[in-house]
Image (tube, helix red, strand yellow):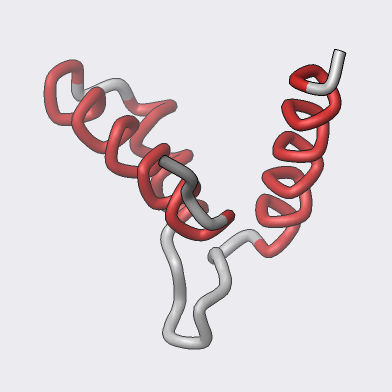
Length: 65
């Protein structure tokens, strides 16, 4: 199964959201706040999307080894 970049991001968001509901950790709650998508389809903190894409590329490079 392969996910798009957006689907993978949403899966990570859901994982963190579930973790937040279990722990009520303020740091995770704050992270979820800035990770949330706005109406234009971009995260509240747009730099997070660029960081996310970098992480995807890093993982892809490791898989090629």
